[in-house]
Length: 96
Image (cartoon, rainbow, N blue to C red):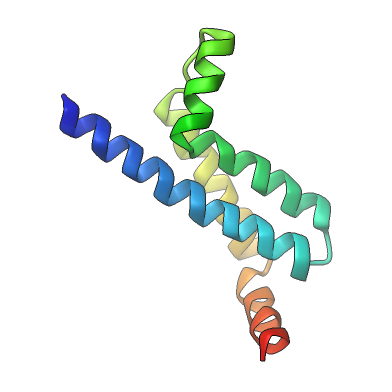
């Protein structure tokens, strides 16, 4: 059972950080910073400490299937509609 918790926390941190970075890219290199802020806030749902605080405050744990749906939405919105590869290109040009 402990291995499952460790794997769950590792996956939570991994996806949380990936989605957080996607949100930051959209905030600073996108044409819609509000969308980027939404992605940053949505990424918090994946991070284990935020989950613990949320569960303690509300008594409700976010189900895994909702996280999967939220993650799929973030990826769809960032890669398809949000043109993430183009924004990454702009970011790399600005950093050089």
